[in-house]
Image (cartoon, rainbow, N blue to C red):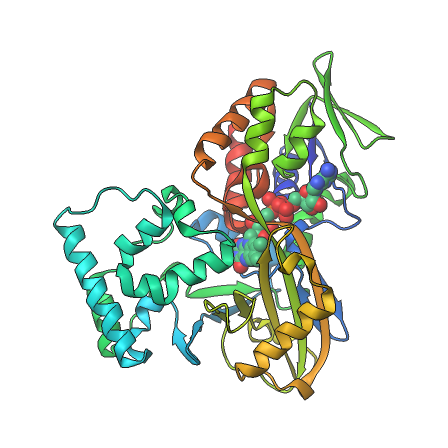
Length: 435
Ligand SMILES: Cc1cc2nc3c(=O)[nH]c(=O)nc-3n(C[C@H](O)[C@H](O)[C@H](O)COP(=O)(O)OP(=O)(O)OC[C@H]3O[C@@H](n4cnc5c(N)ncnc54)[C@H](O)[C@@H]3O)c2cc1C
């Protein structure tokens, strides 16, 4: 059986590796000249930056974590998370509810008092199931943490109003913080949240793209780059996949490319399915890389909820992930900005965005302008799936249709789910096991 995989990002390459290990005939068709999708890295003048925003390696799934560690072998640096939230000029420990002690006193009272009130209401069973993400935030963290951090940060990263987002995806992803931990943190006793991520890894050399090369190493001869799939049709029980000039014939077709690309490539798609895909929401990413002469704070990454501080929702410090990402005596910052076509950010030129980020990092006291020796900027159209209130209805229509015609969907924008790298690998492993 011959299998064609659309897309040579992490998901497509992982499936190819796993199927090839079973001696299956498999090929990967990738539109770009390089594999890796969101997990690409760029190197210049001794600096290495991930182009799709900062990527760290962590997982709750032991099998997946082991897989990533094993393929990387010695090319892996283990780091202890030291993450902050930039709040009113202060570096607050992340997660916010574990860093309350460092807040200005009035804000600390607001956060802990409202957290306790929400906790009591929850224990008394006074809450109805939340109808949207904003309600979920208020019920889980209380009005204080919601208004100081959770709502502004989430509305910045999703570029979407939290009351227009669904709450279904929070279950299991962000647990209700234990009340004892939040009280401890409020009175200044150290506590840790989000512990599955408190130790993470990063490649010593080559950025996150080296994970891609390590995974694809046994199947490099099965990958065709520069093959932008434009049509996928069925003929005599076979799939015919074309880029407009070349045709590939396969028995099985697995898509890891965005649904917004896949569905228009298919023939005779019902209007309801086309409309459901058009209604799915996502946002896009600009990542700005900055090489510095000198040092940056010993922080892993930092969330920036406040719009006034800058457009960036998060900055990370790749030089703190691995010394191999910078030349001697240098350090680095990577800023992430989410946007949607047609909004104010989308119309800004590259240099204007870079200038904005360097200005805001300077005002935050992270860098001094004279220390910047390299800048770069990358745009990715598909960055985050946004779970709007119609998401569950729309995604079901699309999945049912793809299932009915026999196209398998695997990966972040093909499943159209908020999957991190480990989720994509888990998805690929489960798919291969099931077929
Ligand atoms: C800002 C940001 C930070 C992140 N940080 C982390 C992190 O710290 N840790 C973590 O685990 N995960 C992180 N992720 C998630 C991670 O990037 C994704 O889970 C993963 O890269 C998705 O891989 P994929 O193969 O499913 O999709 P993609 O990487 O999008 O790959 C899809 C591929 O399909 C190709 N393609 C598209 N159209 C066509 C076509 N017509 N024909 C052929 N090929 C086509 C594309 O070129 C691309 O190579 C982050 C994501 C973002 C946006």
